[in-house]
Every structure is written in structure tokens, then in C-alpha cells.
Length: 112
Length: 333
Image (cartoon, rainbow over all chains, first blue to last red):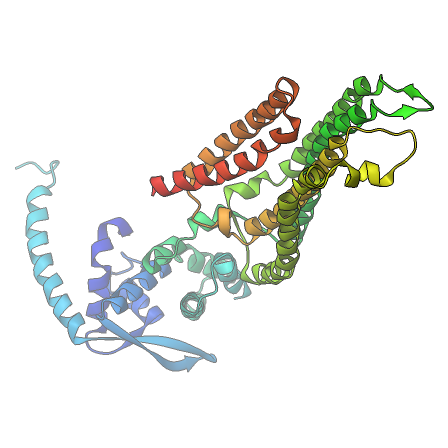
């Protein structure tokens, strides 16, 4: 299980990735994160909703009311053009981050 | 399933009921219920499923920070209920009444020295009642003693409500009730202040008029009781000080009720964004100013024999306090 501190800066990116092909809603996204990460990352409810809020405020996603389950309306989220551009930036940033962090992380126990 | 709903109700219970938050609460409930059903389908027991859903809820502060809602400041504050507000206002009124009576008694105590001093010239059946002047000191100190007791009692009454000075939270509906009550009260308040000011302005006439018109028209001579010869300025002094005593009573009593409303409605001196440092300065300044003023008043009276004019230090001190505290507040900003 990954600690939420490590992944904090990439929650928004993960959500945008999952919205890339079609709109989705809260629980579906959190379930996808759990499944795709092989249950290594379970996003907290409040983390997910603060991310939705932030993404919507920055116009990276837009929300709309969707089909009902058990008489209750769900809020769906759809990625915007601005969101896709932002995702591209994060993709490039992650490429650099990965390379940089890799330079400082090694298994000292493994020997040369 | 009820447990999840109750859990969310608890989490959102103290938060403002904004549309934004209610929407998030509803979304969270829909998600959590769906997650709960999935966990049960996976074979978890009801308790396990609820436990997992709640464990994966997270920390509501995360959402509040994102929305820019500051609840910490409010949640640390005590909420004042309608009943408590009512109790406070009543306590404030009674405590104000005690202070007002106390100050009234002190002024009347000074007054009693005049009247007894004047009566020292009173001749009864040909005998001069000279010793009365000395007795003037007795009611004076009696009244001061009663007044001090009243001041202490009044302070005691308000001790229970000291926590309100630290800031509190009051619901909009409660505020609305007391706003309406205050508007009703303000008419009485204005009337009381007007009467008080008029009394103050007219009070010197009690001395001036008999002196101008002449002794023939002064109160005592109008009464023209046989065998009585009074010091003619004494009744004028008595009337003037009585008028001032009534005015001061009105100012303190109605002012106290008004400041009670100000605190409950968080307006005026007690406005929400009260500058802590300024209010501390005002407190310290006030607690030094008034005892000093009382000492000056007593010194002027006893040593200078200026009782007829010494009372002027009280309105001067009042104006001074207003000037200095508002000046301090302005300079601080």
C-alpha cells in the first residue's frame, strides 16, 4: 500500500488519465485506481473530492449530473481541452522527475 | 448502511450548510454506499464493510482546505444558544442596573452632605440644629458602602459570561431574533439618552436661576415657611446634582443594555474582527482612568471644597476615554 504523502502531487494526473476516454464518477474512479494499482493505492474519499474540486476550479474537468442509482443522482466528471493540455505537461514533468529521483534511489544492500 | 449516513451527518454536522458542501456530502454518500455494496458482494460482513468504507473516508479538513472554508476558528468557539443569549442579556441588564444605582447613590451621598449642611442653618423652635452638618458625612459613607457592594455584586453577576469576550459563534436565526429586539429597544435607548442630556444641560439652571431672579423667588423663600432660613444656594445645588444623578443613572443603565446587544450581535465595540490588542489597551486604560477620576473628584470636593463643580470630571473622563481609545485604534491601523 502506497502512502498518500508520496502520491499527493499526482492524484490530479491519475484522475485525468482515467477520464481521458469517457466521463466518469467518484466511486468508479476510486475503484479503477484500486484495481489498476493492484490494490497498492486506495484513494481516500476526501482526497478524491478535494482533487475533483481543484480540477474543476482550474477548468481541467467539468461536472454534470448523471444517471441515477437507487434514486440518487451521481455527479459525473468530463475532461476539458485545458485538462488534456495540463495532463501533457504533467506527463513531461513526470518523465524528468522519474529520472531525477532514480539518481538518488538505490538499494544499498544489494552491493555492486 | 444507516451507519454510513450517520457517520457523514456527524462529520458535516458542525459545518456551514452551504449548497457546495451539501452537494459534496450527497456525492460522498452515493459513493460510499456503492463501495459498501461492493465490499459486501466481495464477501465482507456488514461490519467489516462499514469499517472499510469509513477507514477509506479520509480527513474532511482536506476538502475544507480545498474549498477555503475555515472551520477551525469557529469550531474552537462556543456556540451561544438562544437561551444563553437571553440569560446574558438579562444578567447584563441587572448588572447594569446595580452599577447605575451605585453611581446614583454616590452622587446622592455627596448631595446629602449639601442638604444637611444647609439644614445646619435650620432653626427649629428657635434652636439652631448645628450638629446636622457633621452628620452629613454619615449618609455619604453609607451610600458609598452600599454602592461598592453593588459594584462587587454586579461584577460577580457577569463573571459567568466572561467567556463571551473571547469570541463565540451564534446562529443567524438567533442573531435575527435579537436584532429585531434591539431595534425595538433602541427607541427607548435614544429616548433615555436624550432625557439624560437635557437634564445635564438644564441642571446648572437650578443654581443660576435663583441667583439671577433673586432670593425672593428662590425655592425656599417661595415656600416661605415660618422660622426657616436656609442657605439659598443649597437647594439649587441639591436639585442640580439630583438631575445629574438621574442622567448618569440613565446613561449607565441603558448603555449597559445596549452593550449587551452589541456583544450578542457582534457589532460596535464587539465587532467580529475585534483587534485584540486595542481591546486590551482599552481595558487597561479604562481600569486606570475611572479610579483616578473618582480620586480627583473626592480630592476636589474634600480638600478644595469644590463639590459644586467637581462632578465635571466625570463627563470629561468619558469624553477623554472615547477620544483616546478611538485615537489608539486609528493609529494602530
